[in-house]
Image 1 (cartoon, rainbow, N blue to C red):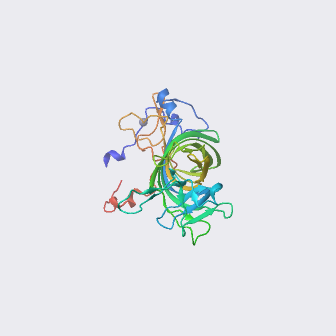
Image 2: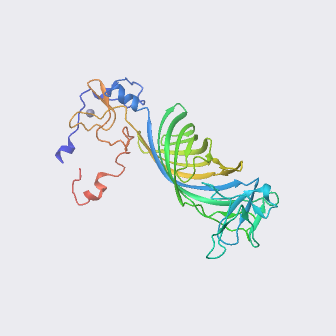
Image 3: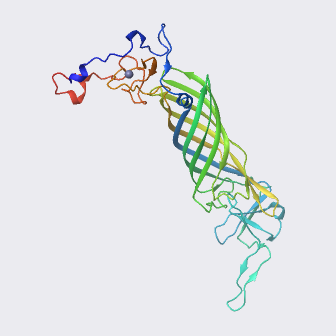
Length: 355
Ligand SMILES: [Zn+2]
């Protein structure tokens, strides 16, 4: 108690203890830090997580759908063979890792060996529909949980940076968008994929106040959809993610943010030996929450027992207060650090003299 009452006197004269950027008689001091920390302090490190919904759709032009009465497959076939009773090939698993079938094993009786058909015979009760007569397709919503790490630098109103994102991508059932009564729904041969993204981004500040900053930004990069999406059959270009970041400063160095975003991505799946491709679209809506941290330019005050609560000077070099952790304001306005009177704090409620 007695210690707390002591008033700390800085080594320098009080009039030299300046509040950064606020004093008219500001005298600039050399930061107590080195050039390396000064360089690192230009960069902001951010982490975020959240939720995303991916809306799968595709273009099945050039294909027909073959749905056998027995079994549960939903196969594609080349539309050119729509009038045949036997299809040369049908294709399963055409969302992520297409497989072709060009013959059936038909057991005749238990003694003789089974017949292998040349092509897939279309039996009565099987469904065979071409995409020239009906706009065929299936839709599905996948659920995403992204984990993102990024580094950025602000230059005036602009922000540039880059990052990586790991994403848990949970598939759900694909339902037909046409002929809903006769076409069945289907699932992919996997339920969870891990997406990896590498991106760069550019942003522009649209609003800025003491505590808030709003930035419209565009991320663009490459996506790796993981082992369930056959890389030999899939090609995909850049993806684009347009978002709006709303940032709240909890201190000079620590911020929290929310970022709603819309993402455009697609890929092309090549169906082997057919010369045909399926174009799959995966637009996604996201909301992410995160925090960013920046290394302070100035080191913490090294003087033992110094309780100064703002940036200050010792021996001609400027330090930040050692009283505040970096997630609190370093250079607070009056009442910001201790908005509650000490005598009203619960731990002091029985003390006659809480100070
Ligand atoms: Zn000090």
